[in-house]
Every structure is written in C-alpha cells, then in structure tokens.
Image (cartoon, rainbow, N blue to C red; front, top):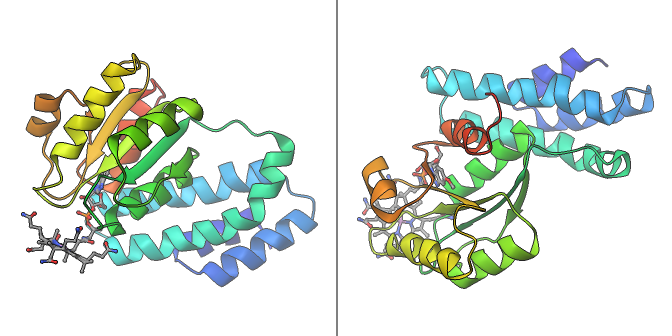
Length: 212
Ligand code: B1M
C-alpha cells in the first residue's frame, strides 16, 4: 500500500485495486487529502495528458475515471470531515430535449478528478433548472453539454435565463458536445468552450483564474 500504488491503479483503470489501496492507505494513517492530491488527481492529470497526446482513448479515460470514482467513494466522507476545499463548484447537465450523457459524464468525472465539486443534473435539463440550481448551490460554473443540433439552442436559452436572473458574469458558462464549436460559444456568449473532457478541466480552471 502506497500513494504510488493508488496512482498506478487510477492510471491503469483498476477500480478494485484503487478502492482497496485507498482503504488501506487511510487505515495506515495517510490523510485523505494527500491521497486525493498526491495520487488520484495527478493520475487523472496524466490520463488527460495521454488522451491529448493520442496515447489513450475515450474508453480508457472512462475506465480510469471509474477507478478514480471508486477511490473517491471511500475518500469523500473523510474529505467532508476534514472540510477540504475544492477548486470550485460546477453544476453540469445535458440540455433540454437531449438524452446523451456519455460525454457529459466523462467531463464530470475529469472535473472531479481535478478537484472540482460537481453537481450533476443529468439529462434533459431545462434552462431554469440549471440557473436555479446554480444560484441555490452558489456555483462558480454551469457546464452545458449537447449532442444534437436541435438541442444546442438550449445553451443559448440557459445563458439568457442566467442574464435575466442577474447572474451573467458571476456564474461562468462552459459548453461542449460533438456539434459545439468555439464560434457557436462566441455567438451565444458562453464564457468557455472545450472540445473534450481533458480540455474542459483546463478551461474550467482558466475561467476561475486557477493556474493549470
Ligand atoms: Co445519438 N445521435 N441520438 N444516441 N448518438 C448522435 C449524437 C448523432 C451524431 C448520430 C448520427 O446520426 N451520426 C446524431 C445527432 C445528429 C445531429 O444532431 N446532427 C444522433 C441522433 C440523431 C440521435 C437520436 C435523435 C436518434 C433517434 O432516436 N432517431 C436520439 C436522440 C435522443 C435524445 O437525445 N433525445 C439519439 C439517441 C442515442 C442513444 C440513446 C441511443 C445513445 C446515447 C446514450 C447515452 O448517452 N447514454 C446515442 C449515442 C451513443 C450516439 C453517438 C453514437 C455517440 C455519442 C457519444 O456518446 N460519444 C453519436 C454519434 C457520434 O457522436 N459519433 C450520436 C462519445 C462521447 C465521449 O463523446 O458526447 O462528443 P461526446 O463528448 C465529448 C466531447 O463532445 C466533450 O467531451 C466529451 C469527452 O471527450 N463534451 C464536453 C461533451 N460535453 C461537454 C461539456 C463540456 C465540455 C466538453 O463542458 C460542460
């Protein structure tokens, strides 16, 4: 049992080992915060780097993200007890009328892997629900995913609803999904666009002024 073995388990997507090693590390007195920041997050950062360099692909990224989740399930209660600060709070979901969630889930897992707290509203989420939840939860970012050209306008509606609520600029909006482009983000006034889960982490950090 060591931080290195947890790092390896997450990097290699071994969820069973990630959970077992995390439990053993906690029992041995290693702090949950150290396991998170010195093993889990660096492993997911490396997964993101390998993905961007074309050395890992979506399925492998998902498998690593699941291993990270397995470790997180054990760490979460300890982190809550220790009141560990997260990088920021993101309310994420797939826009109204759209049921695709594989990419959104991946973005969620990578954000959690990087140290963000993520509130996942699921699929088919209305603009009002995004804005209400972000307000209630005091979120820093609303993350919108859309896979259908017909549901993309839900992103624009969410930004308009945010403006009506007087929260535009206070809560940043990041968008993504296969049909989304930087041009579309600029057109609708989104604060950020990311083409994939790994760059979504970089973009979220950038939006909150956190060094990558
Ligand atoms: Co659908 N579907 N689908 N589908 N489906 C597409 C999107 C489509 C391109 C297939 C095609 O025709 N070639 C097409 C859309 C065409 C268009 O709009 N122009 C399509 C269609 C038409 C439909 C239906 C209408 C089919 C029908 O019923 N007639 C229907 C719509 C249902 C609905 O949503 N109301 C439908 C249904 C489905 C399934 C339910 C069967 C299933 C979804 C299962 C699920 O998600 N739980 C499904 C699937 C699997 C696909 C394809 C094959 C794969 C999507 C996917 O998961 N990709 C897709 C074709 C394709 O894309 N090749 C297709 C993998 C995923 C990791 O990538 O989601 O792009 P992606 O996410 C990436 C990035 O985009 C980015 O990061 C992710 C990870 O790198 N990203 C973000 C995503 N969200 C982000 C948010 C961010 C930042 C980055 O910030 C917040």
